[in-house]
Image (cartoon, rainbow, N blue to C red):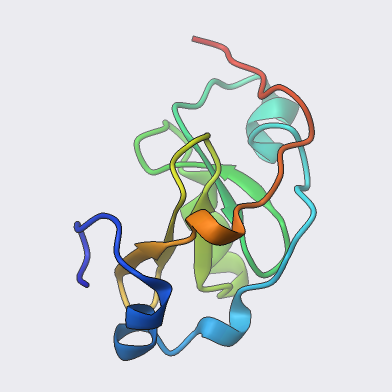
Length: 114
């Protein structure tokens, strides 16, 4: 599978991504984008770091906190955290893959500002 594709099996991810060991069961750091909740800024979609549980906003959101988290920590794998997306992304290898069998549970309803 390659960037921009959707679906697929996680077994195929090993062919394209060397960061399987970074995927962990995590506890979300916040019910929405951690930084946007503090600043009062809106977001479009959420992403959760599958290394530490940081919840950040997507690249279509004004602040791009998920990508900023990757650049600050080098944690390679995020999960699309808006149900029922079910996909993951590796920033390093730039591949999308299926996480539908191992989604991170939400901490209740996701706050929305739009």
